[in-house]
Image (cartoon, rainbow, N blue to C red; front, side, top):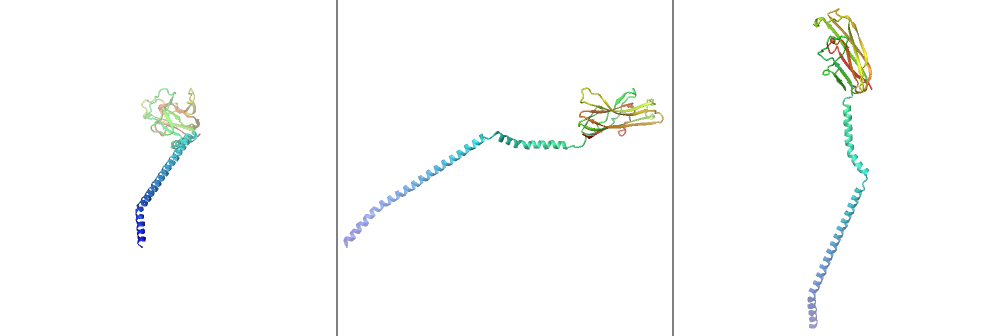
Length: 259
């Protein structure tokens, strides 16, 4: 009995001496496993980073190659996309400018007053000057007695001149018996190298005045004519010193009928 107890004591004593060694061995094994796991994870992370870097590098190279291989047509298409809005804006602006005034060209001019025509040279023709400060104008020009066409087309040209004589207003007591009162409308083609006036219409007559204290005679005429850009029209009269200065008695104008 005592012998058995002694053997049990020795066995327990030996086990207690060996236990720390086994514990130390187990701790070393755990640390090795942890270090190994960390090393493997580190390697995997490095490998993953390298793979991502290589992928991004390849993608960037593909983008660079695609950009370098872009065709001129694609570049022109890009420029066109930028230019088209500007072109459309300019076209709309031009259309608005053209649509701003869609009326047919026309002009109406009253006689310019005061008149300073001389009674001398009664048979001489005189060009009438008109008042462009009081005119009604749509797309026409006026210069020194002439109406100038801006837009070619078929026009109706008209003119009215009134001649009047009153003894009480005439300090010179001019003789107006058998006086010739004529109106002429002329056309000038400015497309020709040498401008030669063309007579469009004429009207008037020879009158015997001094029968009454106040005398008046009016001439009114008009006609249609094809006019070109830059053409001019004007009015000549005889005995311009007898012209009535009233705007409703002496006037000149034209208006476009068609192309």
